[in-house]
Length: 274
Image (tube, rainbow, N blue to C red; front, side, top):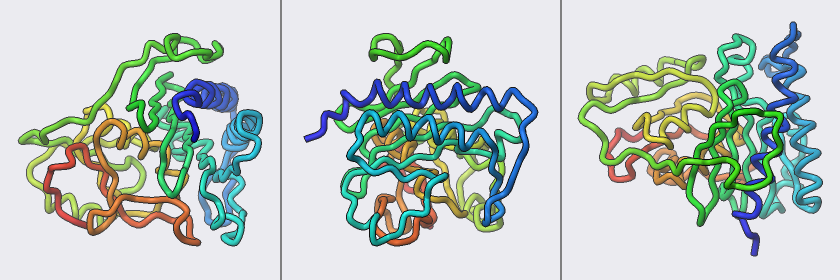
């Protein structure tokens, strides 16, 4: 039996270390390369990846790690994993390149296809959202990213919960960089609502902390994009569901691509299905 709460402090601190490594590059004149799928890659992705992998290997040396920057692990190997770390070292690379601050470090623990522990840290905002089953979800402001985190009390974190019931004029959050025709068609089905645009896993976090009521994602994402923030949303009282209302899960198929999904604040709400 894993004590998830005992892992929260080290995971938040590992995400802090990754953020420090990332910000050194963010504040410089960095170069942008492109992967085979034409998605952007910077030295910050790799610096964050290296910091996270080093920290996780020290913390739990026997648990596998799947990171966006080391994703070439075949299905024959991954299919045998019950518990592993799922990492996006820099979620929102396009926002990083735009220098708008809307990017995050994402670390999640997957157990039996579900995200059960996580941290999502926004380096420029100096804000971390973290959660675990049996603990709930919290948000903390980090005054100085150079200060190591040694206990939960040091964080002065606030408990967060999704908004219930859904207000008459709900807030719908959508991607700043990925708006397509399918998403627009879905938004057109909704009642009058306020639109909030932001990047990376911050969209999930806005739902988790009660600032938004719905985040529909009708475009491509990978499992490392969603796992950490999904745990935060679920432990704050919301849900992340695919077509038909089933929860988004992990490592249940060979492809690491997610289906379309909805991030919902109020589980009793009646949003249009995908």
